Length: 440
Image 1 (tube, rainbow, N blue to C red):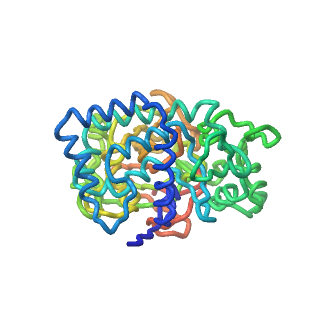
Image 2: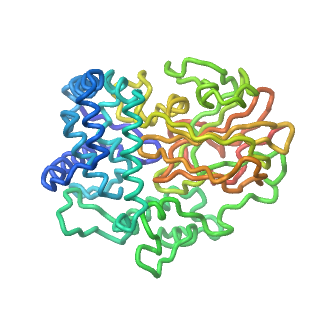
Image 3: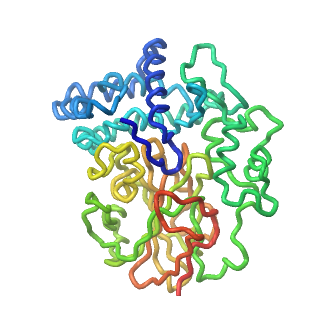
């Protein structure tokens, strides 16, 4: 069966055959490299073996995948073996059978079909499993923030002492730079160059005269900042009635009837505000018929957060949550995690920033940074009591970014500007700090 579906944010290739080939090559590599098992991986393995519910869940998730789906990973032992290999690697493009693709979510890739099973649902909503996954992903984060991870920040094929069966290609190769430039909504406009290399140098803080463009690690590259003046709040948008884009992101959904409590696991994935805001005391100041604007981030672009309004930070919170849970209604869909963005707003690891806007018509609003799969390290960089201007930095995702919400209370009337689009799974980036709405 050949399932091809658009992948939000381009974190994984839409070509399932490419992805299967990549996984098959990773299995060969992991078996031949015979790396010592990372203690965090061993801890998850022991938890699975020692808990009958987890044993049942992780075993059944692979048994339940229909035969026609050609899943290369046949059991959780193989899953753990590949995860152990991935913890020693930085994500990059791969060349397989003369095709280049980005596997930006490698762990997500090996769990793709399993996540949609009932066993996967039980496993990836389990608190203990998510605690173990948190430790595993933190181990990977340490590697991605280390000097050892910058080997992928090169031009052209990546040569390593040991064979790499997926033929990795560096982030500064023409193909990767073109993919990054293609996500720039202002490419070719004004001073923003069309040429891919010039586009990167114009947009991002970097040192192209230095090895690895001056980046000290994979994380340093992925949390890169725009050059001064590239993305700024325009004079017109400094008007207090204007709300600006908090992330370089594409509009996914916008509703004005979000309820305080709803069945977010049902088809349509309605927002359940108390769950999204983790029953924070300030959530009581919202109510039924609140407005939620949600947009997703691309693997190849800017991953920092910026304030959508002028105001004072009145509360912040990091919320632990799930990493690989997807909406049960998605079933065996390789794009299930993408289509589950509404669902994971209530469940995934996330960060809350409550801002009391200087504009009384807006009042209290909430910015929610939502992790997706590997992208679940949410760093808040503002403090309670800080007064922030529209466009000021508020935090960042490490290892990319996934999706975020802006939540406004009932009675806040906003005329949204989606930049000529209808929010959906097939939209393009709106520049960070540009107008997305006007309150009346």
